[in-house]
Image (cartoon, rainbow, N blue to C red; front, side):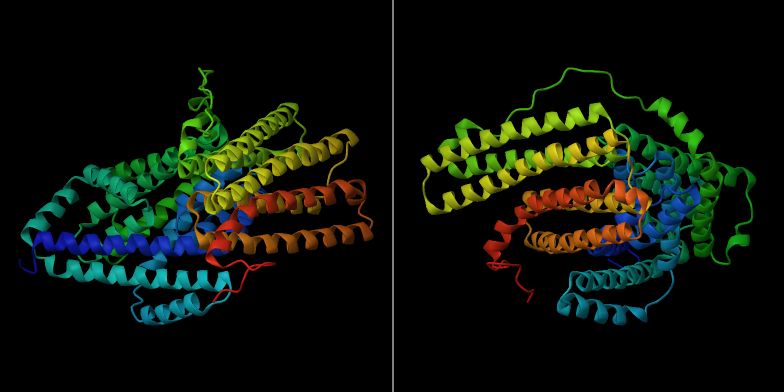
Length: 553
């Protein structure tokens, strides 16, 4: 096998691409785990105007190195009513620009930075006591590996620039831009990262392996592939969220195809946007997304209305009755019966999350249907709680050993907490929203923003708790318990902030004082109920002391 072997080239390029994909993911997950609350707060506040929403999308995508991640978060806010659809689509258009900016930054030759990033990243990750420090180290390691993977890619392609077989294959793509466009879309979709795909294509163009025309077509195709990823990940989302995601797919994917056709017809000199093939390809990627955002931002309203005609609510269909996970047959095998109970508790948690998500909207606009749906869910959770208790009692009778009894008590406590959280939402929070509506009062602007932010933080923790219940991951459980302390401190801080507004004599704060304070306390109770899911896991790993979380070693 020679140095110019196509097989060796494919192996090296595949390895470099795999490392690139992993490195981009390291950076994204580091930001998500270390600063998810701040990111969610940033995105949810992008409702003031379209330009501001787009700017927030740019910042979020640069931080996460992924327009797809921003699209998923935005879709969640649109689905819950926390973000208007128009602002959501504007945020996604900005995120596409942010993704292109990330590609520009990462293509900078910075091999000298790699050892510094690795030293700093590993040091922070291993020695950092705080979660933010460890996640900061993770980000630095990820950035270092991005540069390493690009260097590997350049080294792998260097010997093959004169390979007749490779030159012929790439030359074919240069003469068939439509095929290159489709391949670019497919690779971005398969890699689950348009940023990684664009970096791969630009590096190949920089090494002279990929003709400029093919590189341009593949980068434009990557824009379509990146939009398809978000669309497929939200197929089961709420109607409003799917409409926003589809609108972004139409704009980004359709715009990329139109841009390619115009480039083929008009054949503009690409030397105007770059002196090298790589610079031409990556600059066109940025210019395309900038132009798309500037053209589409004034039209997001009409675009959403047009897409809404395509995405209609499904017609009423036959409903399949939900079957309980509490299988009586499994009682002869305690381990299996306990697994069945865990599934049922998880279902209870998902239903509580479904209650928590829309409840905040009742404070802004009372809706009888939403309140009734929450009450119905609460009744169903209470019924499930009773069934779980009876089932656990039967498990205890069938296998009264110590290990089984310990797990039974853990699951029973989780079920109690889920039932208590549903009662808090249905009785306390819905009742407070009803009281606000009946009195005809409204929160102050600052007070309402604080409540929305606090609700979103609790909702994020609820989702994290359900992930902990599924994965039983000790690190995620520790992070969840740490977040409980943060929520407690934040609730106290918000209570003080409210009292300060009362001292200033703000009329809206005086009228809604008790409702505001009781809502904060109720949300904190819901957060505590979900956090309790982590305690049994940390008790087993020795991370939990009798009174508080032990210090990280």
